[in-house]
Every structure is written in C-alpha cells, then in structure tokens.
Length: 163
Image: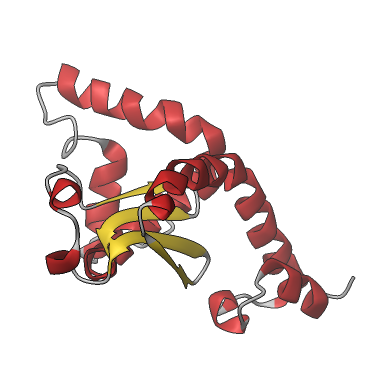
C-alpha cells in the first residue's frame, strides 16, 4: 500500500488533518499513535452514545470527533451546563455541552489527545494517579495534575505541544 493510499484510509475526510506529515514514516507513526489510543476512543464512543440518543451531534475536527448537545452554550440543556467540566477527552473523542465550548477548549483538549496517543490505555490510570499525587502534595487535584498543567502550558505557549 502506498503512503497516499494509507493516508486516504487513515484520514478519509481530507488531507488537512495530515498537515505536517512528511513521508510514509511519519504517516505510519501517526496511524500507530491513533491505534494505540483506539481503546480509549472506543470508550469515548460508548459514553457518547446516550448523548447521541438525546440529540447530540458530531463534528469531525482534524483527527478527533467532537460530540456536543448543542451548537451554542445558550442552546445546551441546563443539566449539561451544570457539570463542572467544559469538555472531556477519551482518545480521539471529545465530549462537551456545546460546539462553541468545544471550539474554545479545542487547543487544550487536543493536548489531551496527544497524551492519549502517547500513553494509550495507561492514561486511564496515569491521569487519576497524577490527580492523587497533586492532592497528596496539597495541590488542587485538577490544576495540580501534571497532565492538566501540560495542557494549560501548551495553550499559553509556555511549552511545545510535543513536550
């Protein structure tokens, strides 16, 4: 299979999601990272099914699927807005109350996608362990979490996304 054919299989929507991929070697690594995160994406897909049953919709953004209950936060159901999180990522699936909210948090959540690509299913253990470690040190379990600190630092431009 040629690199071009593999790219079409890996990214059926278009080549825009493959921007920055130089050659077959990088494409193979991208596919391997996506496969490594696939079990987590499957969990995200399962968790999004009830939302889809109550009217959520899906948008494809790059290598991710974004699931939201409404286009704007004003249109989102009250119960969804009351949750303490704006968005949550499971592999390549990002879930939020509205697409506006997801657009705002997209850079942050895409750092989590990269973390899933690096850690695979072990991220399900590493993330809570990092929160527990932060709590044990007297930090906020969310803001003190090393994965969240990395995501915030990338968004603020303090470190590179692949750090």
